[in-house]
Length: 209
Image (cartoon, rainbow, N blue to C red; front, side, top):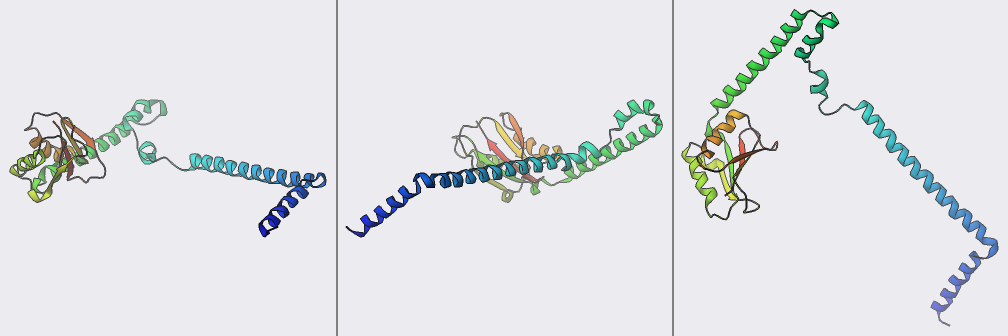
């Protein structure tokens, strides 16, 4: 009898010993204990997750907390002011101040945008059709409109079946208007998409058929 057979018989003998009538109760007790401990641990983890989620819901403010909670709707307040015994004149005054501040700020943003030199605008023009040289031809159009050639990159889009012109940007309307003024030279419809990864002076344009 070789060593392998001897080892195998020893293992079989131990298994038979464990499953003898006198030892089965101990094995079942150990197995049941392990199951109970696992169930209790799982229940504890689940309860902990529920408590953490409840705390986050109750005490962590949402992302738009400042806009929703801290902003004051003066127009709405003016409507219910008489019921609250609030002086309408004070409310209207605050509303006018807020409107004037917004108006001044908007005018400043538009003025800054209008003063931006198109040479500082960066463009990425991608060909989304099977027409060869389309992106390069549009680069020439932008360069002829005063845009700096070094700030204009060209290439191919991820696919060749785009339709119309798609402009990805994160700029104000006045800056976008400088780009759209050139794109309007074509006969294609222009679609715009907001891309917050881009800065105010960067545009990614996909030219479709």
